[in-house]
Image (cartoon, rainbow, N blue to C red):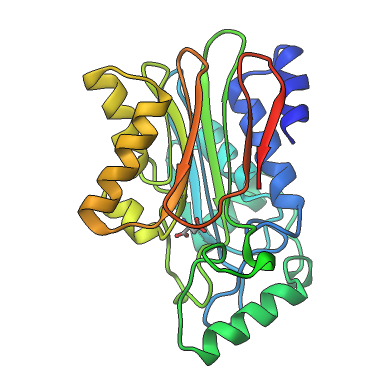
Amino acid sequence: VLEHGRSILDRGASAVEAVEQCASLLEDDPLFNAGCGSVLNENGKVEMDAGIMDGRDLAAGAVAAISNVANPVQLARLVMDGSEHVLLIGDGALHFAEHCGVKLTPDHYFFTPDRIKQLEQARLHHRIMLDHDDEGEEQKYGTIGAVARDRAGNLAAATSTGGIVNKRMGRVGDSPIIGAGVYADNASCAVSATGYGEDFMRTVFAKTLADIIDFRGGDARSAVDEGLAYLTRKVQGRGGAICIDGAGRCASGMTTKKMIHGWIEHGGEAICRF
Ligand code: ASP
């Protein structure tokens, strides 16, 4: 995915195009909690959220509590580019998808045996849980996100998720909430976050990282460190973030045990952390 991002950015793609394409590849991978392979809610259904933002002009698009759309991030992009709104939910979002010619995908595409087992476990223990905050090796593939800076220096961010395991029907997390789970502003940075969405919404997490740079100065590293410290101090929030700043410096951090992620900084080597 990193190399795909590199190759399209090298050929002149915009940061928005890069985050949309990279997020789509991750949505298509059944290992991750987004698109195919999303976690299941209390009714055993997939309900997905996604958001995308363009740091050039703060244009943003998002969808929430949607089913049967293989690539929610692409629908979020259509909301950004093709509607006068920022966030569409549920049936309204699906109606808009059909209006845009997005083909709906049958339920079975989204389900994986691991997610069915995971819901059974969550129900057994009466738990609503993050899918990647567990000791088990098999549990480490979470929500997906991408941030990018293009050759013109523009920033963009995208986040997509099935949410948290055994969540209530209709529950929306931070991922499609601009400023909570996703944010991009050329003046500061692009951020994609993962973790217990309620904590990220209450602390307006992604925008807080941008504000740290915008109002106080600093870089992606200091924004992630200070932002995660704030999340812990205020709400004992659990999760992590990836961030790229206007100078192309990359940073990541987490308060959970794991967050698979990787980066390419200033055209260098692709680095992955498992
Ligand atoms: N932030 C997502 C949510 O609360 C879950 C996650 O990141 O794994 O919906």
